[in-house]
Amino acid sequence: MKCLIIAAGLGRRLRPKAEIKPLALVGGIPLIDRVILTARDAGCDEFYIVTGYRGRRLREHLTALSGHTGIKINTLVNPGWEKPNGWSVLCAKNMLKEPFILSMCDHLYPASLMRDLISAAKELESGLMLATDSQIDNPDIDLDDVTRVYQADGQIKKIGKVLKEYNAFDTGVFACTPDLFDAIETSIEEHEDGTLSGGVRVLAERGLAQVHEIGGKFWLDIDDPDDHEIAEAQLKRLD
Figure 1: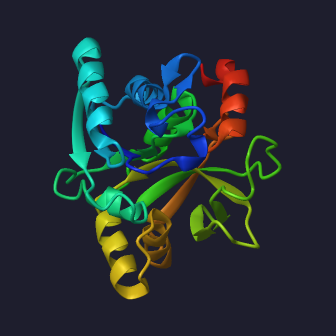
Figure 2 (figure 1 turned 90 degrees about the vertical axis):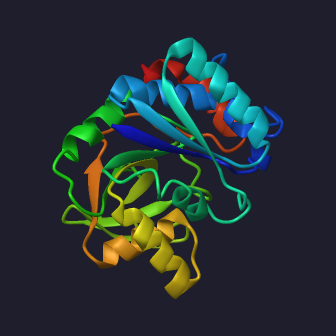
């Protein structure tokens, strides 16, 4: 299965740890390497990485990683990397014509989380399936930054960072069909919302945004030095 990874953003809050966020070391291994290796272990065999800020340096790193691991890595350039993250997803529209996995470059999780999602989504023919965490009292999660989800009957009903009513978190790991590209374009055209969450909302309105509960598995979004410290302390949970 192919895997799309978004790695184009500025990552300003993690700057004390690394000039280029995807190359920030966690346990001595760059974030982007951890995500790629985890996805490979979960069953992904070809990667599309969208780069932007300091993209040349990141692409050089990915070329080297591909060379010494044998993993097939394709790099894409988002010239509008300062725009919302849905624009980075759209960079892969012409490359991904079949179901694929989508992950953020700064979300850590064990391979079993993605492997279970792939299994749950094996019959997915339209829309997407998001790995969600219903443990909303998770002490490792930054409530000021996490994307919140209101889910019911196995479907996303609402998604966004400022939801007042929510019962799950977006872990940043999706099983998608190419319907996502159309949904993001619709979100941009009809709602002037170029975020990935905007595209998910469009699919949710169509009844095409399913959820897969991760069942207490560890995950973490690395946005700032505090998150980095948590990740370093929780490395064993990534096995």
